[in-house]
Amino acid sequence: MMTIKTKRAGRLTAAILMLLAATAPVGTPALAQAVDLQSASMAEAINDDDAQASNAVVEPQFERSSDAAEQQQAGDFYCGERKLGQWFYCERPKAKPSAPQPSAKPSAQPQQSSTAQLKAITKQLDELKARAIIEPTEANVIAYVRYQREQLDRASTFSDTWQRALWQNPDIDYTLQRPVSTVGKRAWTDNRAATRDQVLSRLGQRYGMFYFFAQSCAACEVFSPILRSVAESHRITVMAVSTDGGPSRQFPNYVVDSGQRQRMGVPLATPALVLFDTVTRKTVPVGFGVMSADEVMERIFMLTNSKPGGDF
Image (tube, rainbow, N blue to C red):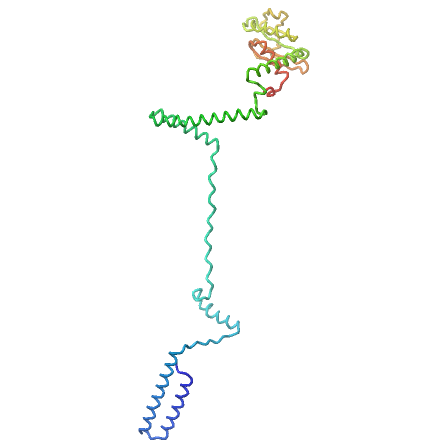
């Protein structure tokens, strides 16, 4: 590049040559010599400037404007109208959408219910048994026996735990209400019989019994003496009713059925024993067929002195 100094030297040389040309005749050697001298001077000046330019680093000078409005206007023209986009830093690069966070690991599958596990065990046991029967090889039989033994051990553990729980929790031990051991059962039976006899001894004050029989009924011949002994021992009044008009040796003061059975709703079965409550004027069937004395007293005691489910 040519500097300001070089330009000035060139202009000065040109002025001198123009002066010489004006005073010298055309085509003289002096004019040609002057022209050659101007060309050599300008070439030398240009060479010097090129050497200086190659050795020196010229920093470009930019004129900075302090006016923000002008900068904004220039930016709008450069970026807005030309729509150069983010590749020329006119627009900030858009942030990449964040990768979706991996969802939480799916929770483990719910544990199989105990009912399903028990069904699976039963199914596997049946399968091993069937395989051992269909293909009775030593391996199949051993597999079945071993699996069956595992289930027997599990059942034994359950039974043992059950027994220990009953021993330590009397509220769930049913044998305390109904003993099963020989000593306990005897004590419970004796105590129950004493309570029952005490109740039945006062039963005749409120209740009476209707006894439906028939002369042609063989079962009535067996049951009549049993009922008579119970009535006498507990002083309970018995009204014997003959359904066929025939007499009874155990109850000579019988009456013939004249609609009593139908009014009480007693089925056509003999012998039939029915309690009659003189307070409520209601009948309570006790039983049909032949019954032992102890069974008759037990039924009467339960029907008159306990609620359903209260004795168990």
